[in-house]
Length: 398
Ligand code: LMR
Image (cartoon, rainbow, N blue to C red; front, side):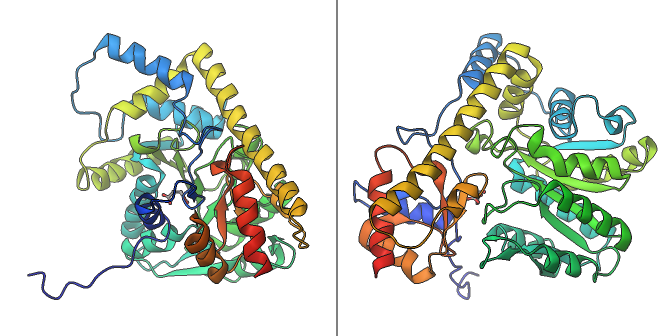
């Protein structure tokens, strides 16, 4: 039965980690996957998470099945973080939230639900976007196209192109938007541009789907939620996928959520009933541990304050690495202006390195980056930054 099975290509991001793990060079650096490492090159176990985990282990709770959509303690905490604790939408019962298996799982629940709602729609993702966006929506059965986003000349957003495209689309088109810390480019929309995107979605009857995987990694919890808040104020219905992989450093626990803003409380109960069917026929109900940790931290004022300060620490360290890399590249005689790295937001930099240059970095230096030239700044530290700057400088000199 497997004789005709073809070899699938490696995943463009997680496949790099496979190659990295197999690399025996002690100086190797993985700038491929979007994971935050501390200055010792370790994935941190946040103190707030550790404290919540300790309390949970001591309480030794039973491990029954969870509600299909996840526990209310978790889904309410997700809503408060995304929409703001005083949100009118939450009070009006207009937000439906279901726990997801990471942000990816949340996207997939949303995609499967959308496919049932609107099977003829096309999904539009930014050009470029996270590699898995296209694959995931295609796997859910949608044609996937792009809207203009990154302008390599300005290293910013081609907003005129993006807006013109949105205004040309048929009603019901699904628009995948990166709520903050655009992956892979690090180029975000301004607040005023978000307002124009909201207006375009309203004018054309588009279905906004916001992907929020990096809340807190640009400017802060509330500041990074500006797109969600503007859509909330618009009266439109929309989707938000969110993730605690990065913000709680809980990658392998796969803690995410899908939130859907509906028109009314009554609509919410119908929407939730359908989302639950999608989940039940897929993995039945979600895992307990990670969501319990997140709910505990977010509902305890002390642990929440501790988490926010740890999140700020991660954000600040990434910024320091951005500045450090730019300075070191200049010090190594790289003529090209890399100051854009400091302006990009979140974990990534779209360096402008070509696929060939990335391949040389990997082969000659054991420095792994995505073939599009995306690097994860959060993998740099005081020990490896010189080595990485040196590798990039040598590759650029050809
Ligand atoms: C990334 O873009 O590297 C992360 O979001 C991890 C992943 O799942 O691809």
